[in-house]
Image 1 (cartoon, rainbow, N blue to C red):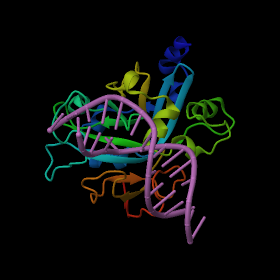
Image 2: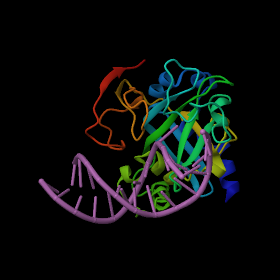
Image 3: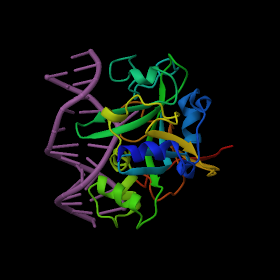
Image 4: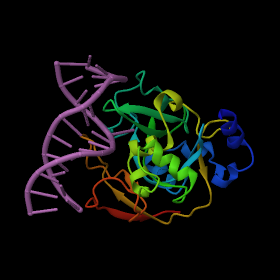
Length: 234
DNA sequence: CAGCCGATAAGCT
DNA sequence: GCTTATCGGCTGA
């Protein structure tokens, strides 16, 4: 079973999810990386098969070198055992547990030595209804195979649950390595317009416009009343 | 649909 | 000892 996942992540069929993303894409400030990460594909080559989603909502968290600082970021007070991945090279997974029950996944940004990351807040499941992959993601969430897509992956901890992402298995993994079971890929999906709002669920720096999403996508998390401005990218 | 609330434990001071 | 980048169930409109 694990062999199947090994074969699938490097062998034929993997190109279905597009090409591995380049490291340089992430060696930049998170507020620039975050909007451009929308539309990209997160894949987990799990023991039960490939589980994937298209990124539709993210938030940027800035490293302590920033002026002004970002007190909402885990890296705000410098390196600790928990957040050390954020101070390492770009393109790695920072997975942490929250409220004792859930996980959230970030992608490290900036070059080695500097912190900064993008929190993945929502995905669109890359598997249609009535597929085995969709049923597997629903099952991971404790839902019936016919559940709505947004019930699977709208929310940072929901998407970790759906894809089977955990701190023990995935924290620190290189997301840009063909041998990793967790990867970021780009398949040519084009994003032209991005919704910009304040971040969700934080107590500090609540007014910074660092949440980015595909406008009116039905898999977004958070209150629908949260409005913001729109920007054009590329 | 919006708003409130409790669960539950790691991480840091 | 206190905080917390969440979720799901409940209430009331």
